[in-house]
Length: 340
Image (cartoon, one colour):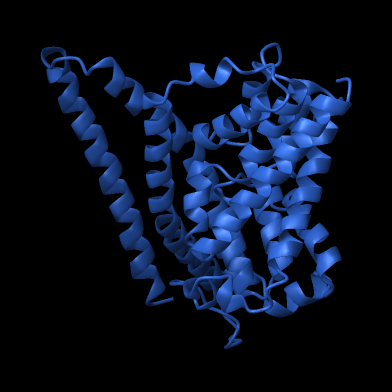
């Protein structure tokens, strides 16, 4: 307690000073903004898109970091061993639906998975949760229902997300060596974490403070990848003409590829992507709409960069390719064979 409290107070003071500095700077700029030349339209669009992506995703990253800190402090390796089955198939399926208990988007799920891996989470379950959690959670299910109702698009999104995520988890977990899948920082103690090596009884307040400090470490560690991914996504949205993708919306193959590419570039949070997909209904095929709703939350530009802080680079590439090709196959199959 004696060592944690000063760190906590120091963090709070730093946050307050940052907020105060931002408010002061904004007040000063109000007085001189009228005299400054307006930014070019391209620059204004870039800033707007970047802030939109970052502000939309940052609260969910914070939520995931808080969940990660609480898991690190209050969930033991024995708890993980009791909950998750040993066999890979039921383990992957369990991971695919774990988002019902951890309602976080594609940003917040990454620190949670990294923390759970330190607690002994099976590899297949972690990958399945990483890919399916942004869709299979109460918030996203409710938004999908609000946009499309309990129809073919809703059930296709749910079923395909579970099946494809569990399948990718099973394929990658066939590599038994964790050192060939995960970065050393994923399996080693994370700054601020307590681990399971020493079981020391502590007061609840001490454990909560430790969880918050660990969450802060996770947030700033993963936040740099969120910023970089948001910058890249904003750049692609600003400088790559999107109309080129919209012109091919009725072809059964190219429409699916176009919306998968668009989902990857836009990096829209899974909690709101259903309403964006709804705007494509009269332009794109049904298979392309389903592909947008399934592939985008699994892997987009900003989340794929965050994956590089958990997995080795080749594993991230394998996940991207497996997810893209699986969703592409299903989307084209829907367009060619189902009268939706």
